[in-house]
Image 1 (cartoon, helix red, strand yellow):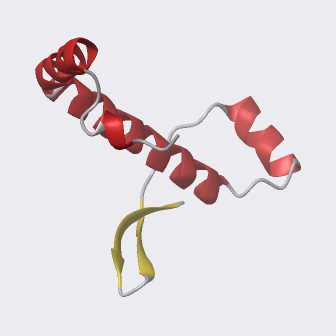
Image 2: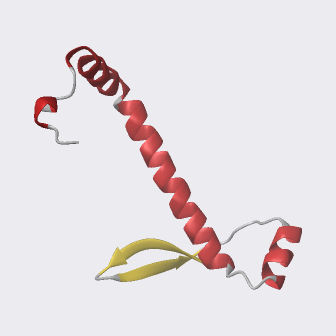
Length: 84
């Protein structure tokens, strides 16, 4: 089983790894022709993206709240020039 670790010049570098998976789900996935490596890689990529977004939001919550308060009280910057 392989997972993306880095990407160089448009080519993805893979790294072998061991995983412990639910036996029944694994058997069913194989029966259905699901590529386990690709599925795990895609799901892990999604989890990493979600966690990065969550952490960014947590780190910047003070600024986000402050900006929201400013736009609530003063309106959007350049609002008078909006055409929509």
